[in-house]
Image 1: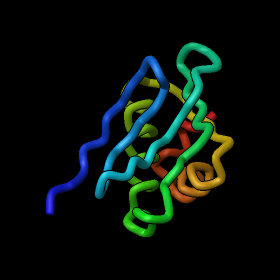
Image 2: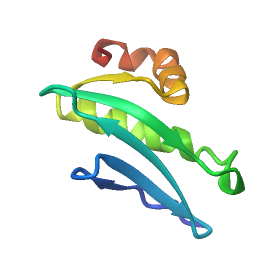
Image 3: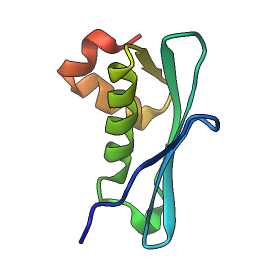
Image 4: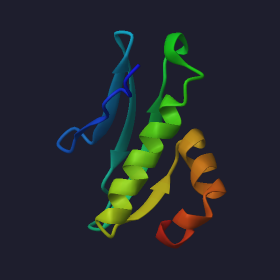
Length: 93
């Protein structure tokens, strides 16, 4: 089974992936230059418990770090992952 592809729509400020015809997604804001603020990570129950939310957060945070941005979150799920990942600490706002 191949890994679902994560797509990024910068205009809509949204990362998404589709599994079994169901979309999981992460949304964010750009409150200032050089800053990403994650607002929501949504994984429907029908595709839950597969690590999709974790994959979306890792991709979004990884892209922000690669761009030299600082990251913050109001999403409980993303915030919990960010707090647990020591490598991300220098990049959190």
